[in-house]
Amino acid sequence: QPGGDGGGENGMGVNAAGLAGLLPLVVGYAVCSSSLLVANKWALELFPMPNLLMFAQFATSLAVVVVLAGAKLVECDKLEKEKVIAFFPVVLIFYAVLWSNLKALDALGVDLVILFRSLTPFAISVGDYIYLGRAMPSLQSWYALISMTMCTAFIFVREPHISLSGVLWGILYYVILSVDMVYLKKITVDVKLSTYGRVLYTNLLAAPPALILALASGEFNGIGSYLSSMSPQAVIAVSSTCILGYGMSFLSWALRAKVSALTFVVIGILCKIGSVVINGIFMSKHLSMQSMILVCLGITASTLYEQ
Image 1 (cartoon, rainbow, N blue to C red):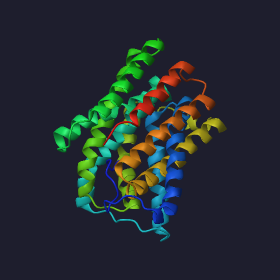
Image 2: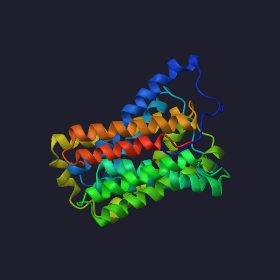
Image 3: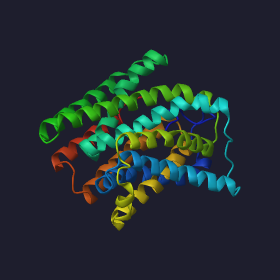
């Protein structure tokens, strides 16, 4: 979700008193994060329309916030022209990340997409140094980055079925995600919104581009007959991504506001290991056991990266 990699809004870590309230957020985020990547892959196999799938997720999250706010069950920021203008680049990058992620999932599968994501600290460290005035990585961090890169290279050698187009989609996802993490650290600090407000702004502004791309790619051709003949399994798959999408949209914002940046990154990396396990158990298309071990080694190496 957009919102950068910053820590809590008050700049403080988590104390013992706040741990009980934080635990449900961590557990909920872990479940959604570990499951959504695999659910998207499952949904794309049964509903091969990535742009319409994204629109369904945006529309579901938007509808939930509107209904809750309309029933006065939650407080949500109202739309303001200045905030919409300021938040629009955030949504564009957020949407680009989701779109490239779905394309990379379709071309590479869950395991390699996770590893591409775990390699982003290399680009982010350079971006932090150039644009945010931070120090370059320590020796321990360089060791982590080199180890992760070696694991990636070994996997590409071991898996000859990986196509050049798949690698290009993975690289595109890597670049966009790196830009997302560096740019959003800078922009979201200036746009003050509540958690529900961010969910509202994000999904409201991200939905129209999804429809435009769906039209441009011909996904609406024969959509009526396709939807009427969808199997129950496909309906369940698409619905699960919508539910998990809302969970990620809300919980990622809520968790970022309560933990430090390093804690959030570590939680995210551990969730990706969960995605590898879920994918290996439930999905028919995944890497060999040796390559999956390399994926886990690469992800584990990324935990040595020092902020």
